[in-house]
Image (cartoon, rainbow, N blue to C red):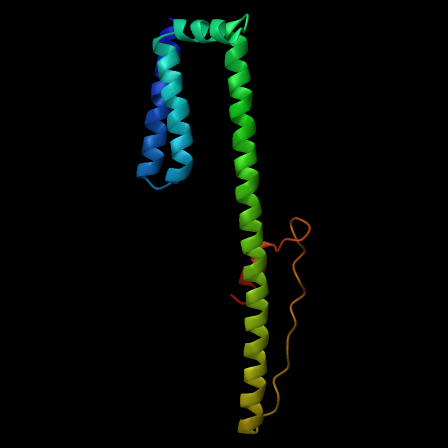
Length: 148
C-alpha cells in the first residue's frame, strides 16, 4: 500500500509540474528540476528495491538514510540556486531604481527649462521621501512606482 501511495504522489507531482508550466505559472528552467525529481520518485516508487541496491553499492547501511541524504543535497542545491537568482533580481531592481531616479531628475530639469522658456513661474518641486529598503543595499519594489 505504501508503494502505491508513493507512486500516486510522485505521479501527481509530475502532473502538477506539467500543468503549472502549461498555465505559465512555473518557468521551464525550474520545471526541469522538479520533473527530474518527480521522475526519480516515480522510478523509486515503482522499483523500491532499487534504493536498497544503490545504498548497498554506496555502502549506506539503511536505504532510507540514502534517501534523506539525497533529499538534503537536493534542498541545499535548490536553496543555493534560489539565492543566486534572488541576488540577480536584487541587482536588477537596484539598477532600475537608479535609472528611474536619473530619468525623473532629467524630466524635472527639462520641465524647468520649458517653464523658463515659456515665461511661466517655476513649478514647485515636490520631493517624495525615499522608501526604506527591504534589504540593505536593495531598492524596495514600490520605489519604482512612486509616480503612479
